[in-house]
Each structure stands twice: as C-alpha cells, then as structure tokens.
Length: 336
Image 1 (cartoon, rainbow, N blue to C red):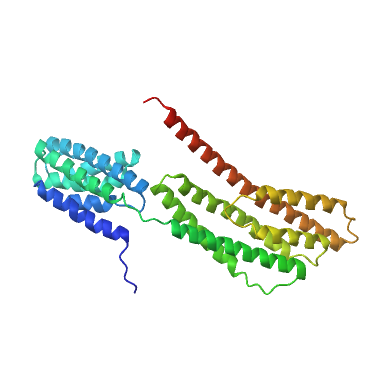
Image 2 (image 1 turned 180 degrees about the vertical axis):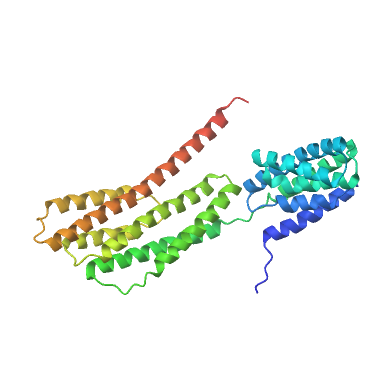
C-alpha cells in the first residue's frame, strides 16, 4: 500500500491543532469542538469551503437558538433532545443548510451537558464556531498550482487527437489499418480527468486563464464526440474514391493545427473549397460509389461541426477578454 500525505491532509491536521490551541488560549469550554469544525470546513476547493462554512455556521447558530429555547422551556431531558432534532432537522433541510446538522447537534449536546443556557454558554459556542470556521477558511486560502498538470493534459489530448487523425488518414487512403484504438479510451479518460481538475481550479481561482482551461477541455470533449461519430463511418467505407483522398488530405492539414490557437476559419474555407469541388465532379456510376460518397458527405458535415465548435470557443474566449479590458478601462477612468 502506497502511503502519501496530501496538502489537504496537512492543512486539516495543522488547522485542527491551531483551532484547538486558540480555543484553549481563550479558555473556552468544549475547546476540541473548534478543531472538529475546522476539519469539517476544509474542502477540496475554496468555493466549496465557503459554502460549507456558511451552512455549518448558520445551521449551528439556528440550532443553538432552538436548543436553548426548548431546554429552558421543557427541561434538560433526553426526550427534549428528541423534540429538538424533530424540529431542527426538517428546518435545516428545507433551508438547504443540511451540512450543519451534525455541528448543530453537537452544540445541542453541549447545552445538555452544561444543563444551562446562559449567555456565557451561548457566546462560548459562537466563539468556538467562529474560531473553527475562521481557521478553516484561512487554511483553505492556499491551493496548489495545477497549471502544469492542466498543460500536460492539454498536450496529451492534442497528441491523441493527432494520432487518431493519422489512423483515419491511413484507413481512408489504404482501406486498412492495424490500429488498436487505444487512444480512444485513453482520450476519454484524459478529458474526464482534465475537465474535473479544470473545474476545481476554476472554483479556486476566478481568473481569465482558469476559465480558458475549462472552456478548452469542454471544447475538446465536444470535438471528441464528433470524432467518435466519424470513426464508424470510416470503418464502413467499402472502398476509397478520389473524394476520400481529398478528405484525407484535408484531415492531414487539420492534424497539424491541433493546438490551442484559432485556425478554424482557415480550415472552414478549405472545407468550402473542397465541397465545391465535390459538386463539380461526375455523379456516381454505381450504388457502391453512391453510398461511399454519401458517407463521405456526412463525414464532411461532421468535420464542419468539429471546426465550428473550435470557432465558437475562440469567440467566447475573445468576448471574455474584451469584457475584461473594458472593465479594466472603466476602473482606470473612474473618478478618485
């Protein structure tokens, strides 16, 4: 078994210790609870951490109020705990703060243990919450830089796209291929992992570059779906014709432009020229040629969609940059 301590484990361990130390420093009762809150609030992303911290704090304060009223009104008995849970849990679920059910239940038990709900006890619990949540949010300000991982995913996916297109070209030109299709399953896995990592990175850093990574992998995922649709069409071609060789030449050019840059317009123009050439060529002489050319026509339509996805992504990226520039300009021009 491989033993590894990740950055989140380190943050959780150190954060819990710091929270308990601060709670002890202020001589709070049930000081260990501050460490528990810290552990519960440290999440994989900053966005998730803020969300969980809010839910736990809000639900715990609300549960503290309900518990104080019930205990003081009904009495400190186990059956009062049952009533408190029956009242508080449905309210928290309806308010969509169910992540705070556990922490609010612990606070309720603190009151039950103390057998009183004085202002000192209530403030003690709020201070514990503030310390635990505060330490967790401070600890979660550090997130590792995953840009190198994202770039590696990008390069591997692009290389797989090139390999797939190479095999497509070979099959169209020669009508046969020894390709085992390994890149198909590998690319599907890479896209899933890369998109998840890019989404986590986006939740940590709301910068333009992080948004571009997520949009990029989303674009490649959509393009990959088109490639998966094209492959069965190619494998069903009975024989190759001049149109097939022209498509193979086009894919050969397209293969060399698989990178983050936008060359979609250039290739769309080439595609238009190729389609015009198809229209000027003689009609099919037999059924087999007709079916083959029909399949190639469907494939050309898919390639057009493949390029339009890239063009759309480039437009979105450009619009985001324009908005950022305008916002920056407005900030600079605003009166001091």
